[in-house]
Image (cartoon, rainbow, N blue to C red; front, side):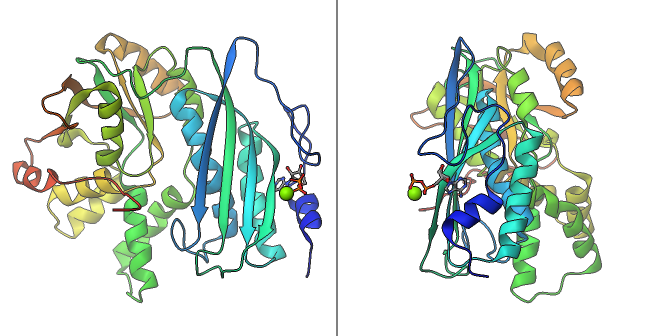
Length: 344
Ligand code: ADP
Ligand code: MG
């Protein structure tokens, strides 16, 4: 049972590198970026009890810990190269380590992204009590000047999102209800089965992100909910947007669930716009790129939906002008909608 630090690293986190010159085992890892490229760096921390249920399936957790970082690389148009993994663990469980590293390294292999180092320490707290902390720093490469930043949106650009929105948020609500002792109805339980992978096993849109170099004028990935995240682009680009709620991409599971409960459609929009964990790409691009985008969407096998346009900044603060013909009453509720914020 009692493995020490180096056995953990050796058994679960050491494997031959595909692209790095030197991986786990020395004081530093060594890797290079291709000539004429920049290194893109991103870091994400996951804390038990805050970002995930402490007893979540370890394999899914390993997948998600890396997926959220690959999603950030995708959102810059960067190609993944490698990542470091820093772990604070309250205790050593071989079953947990095997599951976690399995999910993590499967995804790493899929995206040819090497685990090149990290750090492993013991934490004093328990799993339940924020005691499991996972930090991943990922490195990618992008041709110099080609990264798609948040500050490039132009008035007149279209606003696009990939995939569907809101599934992960609704899965979280259903799981929280289960955890608090609620028994879900048959329809809800079935919906949870369909929605849960979207929360626990997000797909980073890496190929799409890379293909959007030179096509998108600005981009970010949606991690805290569109309503909050889009404002980062508005602030950086000094513009506003108009969003047509009637065309928001929603899964049939989510739509049917709300229809079945006879909820007004804007309840579904609330999931789609204020819920986190979508890990879809949101980007702006010139209307002249619409044909290119249709082609690109079918090549990457990811649906793209044009949900609005960039407009001139009206006031001091960034503003989203929500529009709908189907549910004008829904708009009344939306003015205050924001994404998730840890310290609010
Ligand atoms: P140092 O004391 O020089 O910081 P460590 O003893 O902490 O090195 O780590 C030994 C090697 O194992 C290093 O190459 C480090 O990057 C790697 N490493 C430590 N923890 C992890 C981990 N969780 N995943 C991958 N590599 C790790
Ligand atoms: Mg160390």
